[in-house]
Amino acid sequence: MAHRLQRFVYGDTARSNGREYRYPGFVEKTGVRYLGQSVIFVRPNLLGELVDFLSKSRIEHEVTAAAVGQSRGWTISGICPKRVVSVRDATWSFSGFCPKSLVVRCLRSLPCLLRSEDFGHMSEHPQRFFRIPRVARSVLTAVVDRSGRGGTRKVKAAFEEVAARYEEHGLRVSWPVSAEIVSMAIMGATKSSDSSHTLFVSVRAVESGLLDGLIAHEMGHMLRTESGHASHNAEVFRALSREVRIPRAAEGAFSAAFNHIQDIYADDYAFLVFSTDGDDRAYEFFSQWIEGNASMRGRNRWKNVSLAATNGFALGNLLRHGRLSKDDPLWERAHAFDREAGFEAVAALANFYAKLPEDPSPEAFVTQVNTLATVMTRAASS
Image (cartoon, rainbow, N blue to C red):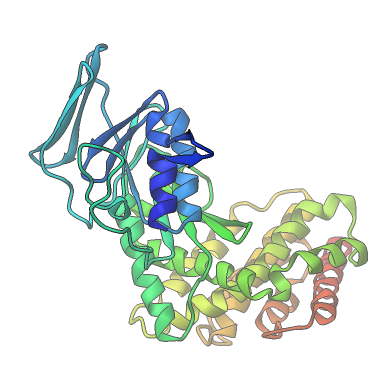
């Protein structure tokens, strides 16, 4: 790992048949400066290449925005209180370095500093290392703020807390995870590909009291993907595209309802790690969904069926985990939505989500999805 990191960052020299071959390192690119003590100055157009290498190598690193100073050089400040890095006219000085716990951010429009504990203590001569870098213990390889609103430290702390809770139950995400704080309509999302995960966290989630719950939910998706669960399996998705038939007008509604199936299986893990919480945030969260849907009912039949499916998912999820009684007022609110929309579907939908089998075979899962399509089509046709 140490040699690979040194070769990428600083380059390497090899000799063969009496000739010397030089492999340039990342710090030799235009727009990159080595500042010392594990700090590299990187312009935004090059940041992705470096972060990608570190993430795939599972090396912990931190990114922060840097302010641009005079045109003849840079003045970079605010890395740590009362500690400043400055670069002017091709010379640099460095005083102090950030505490290990600091989580920093990068704005696309600004040059960035990237700091990694794994670079080791370096001399002013970039070819030398004073210690071998360690492999990152945490699966979280990076937290980057794409919104400009901050919150990277909060996301990292919440991720590590939730990961610790999962480990208490013998569950651990294995693939490297990079997190991005973004402006988006939903609370968050996860993209999994090439044996890695990208966790997208909305600004709203960072600023709310639901950040740890969101991360627990998204970590549930990661665990299901890594285990090849039928609800998160690409081969099963291909089978669904062949065997499940829905009207074209229903595609949006059915897609949302199918996502709720995946959410059920992710929440089976999320509820597990939060089962000891004194406050029932899940009930409050899902009850707000049902309350909000009442004002969103319209004339489009399939849109109303989609909202009914969301109500069914909220009720079914709470019922599945023992957070909802049979006489809870949420039932009546969901039934009232159906009556005003001119159909009756929420009871069947809630029952469907509540009783999804824990670990279905691919064939059984396809059957379950067809059942969902049937329930929704009947509601739209009634």
